[in-house]
Length: 162
Image 1 (tube, one colour):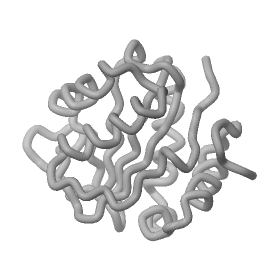
Image 2 (tube, one colour):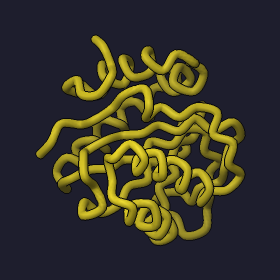
Image 3 (cartoon, rainbow, N blue to C red):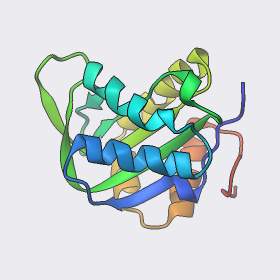
Image 4 (tube, one colour):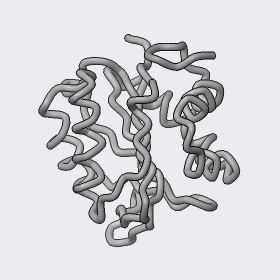
């Protein structure tokens, strides 16, 4: 199991997409361009979201946590997309309901255990309205990376500092 890669290049603010697919394609393409996932990851993340919605209504900003199978991943990583305007994502576990998502936490995990563990850690952030507002409104990507490092108790990888 590899260390989680997270640096400032994976904090994407001002995402100006108006559709769920546009948001997913943009963030997945960034992971691909950083060399962290295979090209197949891009379509795989879109396809999985269509079958298994990942939107979560939370206090403050709703979030989505798209992820897909490990065979599309080169390096375990997390990218965060801060949307300029909310985009409707299907609510996890619901057939037809949607939620207006402001923040997308896209996971690229290289094994099932690390994916479950990361989802559990992220849920703590999702339950903290102040933390979500901080992530949405902070323009300093280094501060965002450091806050995520602290909240997720990550080992440093990438360009972040502690």
